[in-house]
Image (tube, rainbow, N blue to C red; front, side):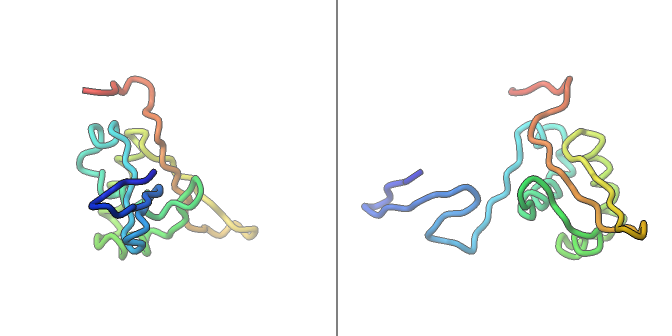
Length: 117
């Protein structure tokens, strides 16, 4: 998509604009804004970290990045899961040791969530 501003052309791509490559934008579906008002900051943070269809980050690193405690993060993750905004996939290595969870952002609302105003 291109935008004409004062005779200059600015190319806009998903997640960034070429005139400010250091600026990122999070993608948050409207239904998440409506259903998860207190946790939308976490959904947005995960959106920025998403690679492909998943987010692979430890709780400790995500808490440090977001500037919150691990317990606060766990409460907000639980609320997003309950609302259907994210899915959490636990992982283990070959020796059955825990690895960081994978987080999947759900763009489509769960059944029963009313869309639009």
